[in-house]
Image (tube, rainbow, N blue to C red; front, top):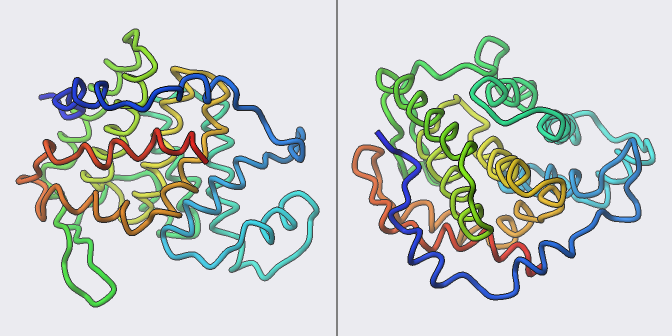
Length: 256
């Protein structure tokens, strides 16, 4: 069963903004980065965390991470964990074994130890701030087999030769399918955004880590969540033909 589908690929390619491959090729690391500190990893960790409601500012986090300025542990610990997960991803291949490991790292201060890197065993609902159910994820009884389908699709895509536009399409689709499966008890969004960039890096090299996708999603977080919700309320009834607005967000990150 194919989960990471090409159903919108042709329409996506036809509407892909011009000049983005040149913008990607012009990306480079920030001068402030060094062997012990990555500016763009800090950007990714801070803004992906802010999407999840963490109260953290990039300037403060850079002072903490690069210059060793101390803040209360609760202010930085989850972001530090996510930063470590990105560092792990940079030095390890993307596959069915490394993805749970990334969750172990980023969820160290989010879920209980026995839940880190493990598929959930309970039903999962995503609720709005006012308690309204916005999404019902796949049943835990179907979760393991669905994740096996996901990993099989991922293996297939990693082995394929893809052009620049196809790479961006499938990176976004991987992000979308993963977050809709919602395999963890928590940390699904952080994981999905990291995996999206990880796939880009597998296909396009180190410059992928300089794409400010997490910042773009945060700056447009209301649209980000709207584009996720539009597919439907329940996993079994998701309509991926409505996914194009979500898929088109990642390339916009190159315009920041």
